[in-house]
Image 1 (cartoon, helix red, strand yellow):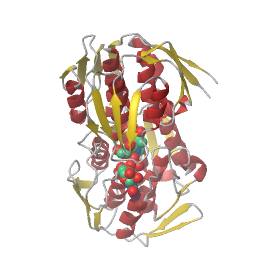
Image 2 (cartoon, helix red, strand yellow):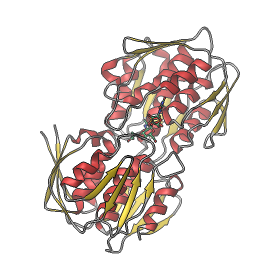
Image 3 (spheres, rainbow, N blue to C red):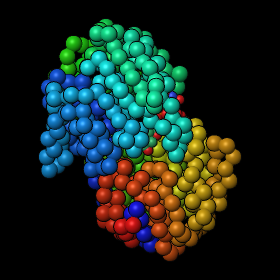
Image 4 (cartoon, helix red, strand yellow):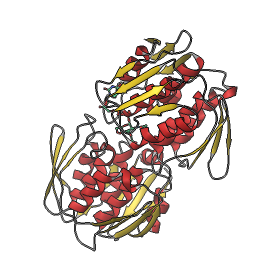
Length: 420
Ligand code: EPZ
């Protein structure tokens, strides 16, 4: 298993170009299964999870043509199977996103149930209930979800018990080919849901209200092909801002969408950073100062994202003062705190709240990544620690950060990967 070795202490300064958003690209690749013509998806990030999604649709018989810039043309007309096997789903929970498209377009789907996960139990009951409301017959046996529909799905009101991002995406995709109107209430408002809806509209879907908590879909008989470019990654953006803020440096982030990061930029300003934005760029300047500790509560968009909680915790850990971090989306998303405590962080955990008393310095140590964003937070902690930190199980980071060593090296970080 590869490891990252980081020698801390360098102030990061410079420019970074942001990749396409993983959590937009995954549902958009699944949505191509709804079309009756080839769909070309551009600005795909070069990540393990994207390769897994491409492999998943390829195994269904779908033809893929990849160009050198990783634009992928997906031709769903060659689909032979409507099966998502356990061996792929177990490596990536987002495989569940093929359930709605397969069912709506081909009338059946057999998708392995994703298991538990390091950050929480993460059930998919809301996905299943939503599809059942649209007339699907769903049976869960032998670790698989078997879904069938007798003819087209029927548009229906769908009310989610909690805000679920991939649940909203699955039902939204299924509704585009259903007969009649679907109204999704308590829908997720995340920019990735909006991006998916915009791609579906480019394919000929009739959708309104995306970006609000009520999405209205009037089903159409067919969706056509299109070329669509994935939104820039707001979490990758926030992660580089956090890394630079923790080291007291200055960064210009390019090819991004500042309007998807309001809550996060607000927290950086509270922490003492000077933040400026343009249409597709952000600059952040800490002017060599230590950040001020800030309080954070994660919640669905437009509130502070759970996917930035770990990285901001790493900023608080070396900040001045006491910051409280409350995680309300997942029940077990503090594993990184234990590793940072091993590096000298002062953290007390009480249920879903971590009270962090900033320390002036961390010490390098061998640590272990437990999930994608936890690994990013350990990289940030290592960048400000004295001495060398070795981060094990780094495969997590390759699921969500394109060329992370190269991008950090360009900012002045001393980071290298060693094959394990
Ligand atoms: C998406 O996961 C993202 N993944 C996650 O990104 C992100 O952390 C999460 O949304 C929250 O923003 C993708 O988009 C591929 P949820 P998702 O359904 O959709 C509960 C990353 O690091 N719930 O919005 O799986 C669930 O347990 C990742 O890039 C049910 O109880 O998350 C959780 O507590 C990790 N039943 C809450 O809802 C359901 O049927 C929100 O989860 C569905 C969800």
